[in-house]
Image (tube, rainbow, N blue to C red; front, side, top):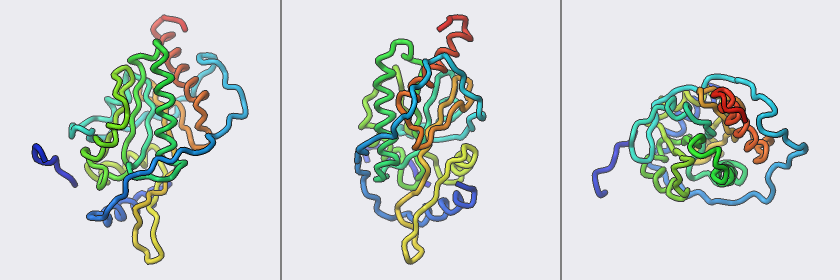
Length: 241
């Protein structure tokens, strides 16, 4: 659907609508995403248990797909959901919904800062963000977007896109990521992707262990869940807590 520039220069049916609508967007003009910050994050009504004092269920194996990173390199998703604890989400760069992609990015940025302050997490966690819109979010666009995130090899944050909807749709379907395109009064697709915000926590064996929707995006709980998987890993290797 796109080529590298020269040097110098909720349902399967809903997913199918996305494919057709996004193709209609070719040549359209996307506005850069604003970054509004929600006034209040979801409030936690309980005290989360200590990391390692509970187990997370094994929900499903994370799917594989061939994606492309901001450097135009092909990346197998299976290689980015193994050997580290992975927090994965979907987004699009021009999203302006305060409770959508900008909120997820803010939340993940805060989690990343907290994890980087914990030596036991160094080199054992990664974040992955995959674009909903391969038509607009080319590797070049992703590179500009990712450039706003401080690089730190201790906790890499991968920004990926697909070559087209054919590669993306099975991935969305497999993970149950609800998404649909908004239409105007004339039935024309608008440059708004309506999706349920979800974050997927994946263990080092590539198994989804938790799925967070908006009402459950509590940073303290998510941090404890990540640390619980790290404790689980250490115990499996005979290292205790």
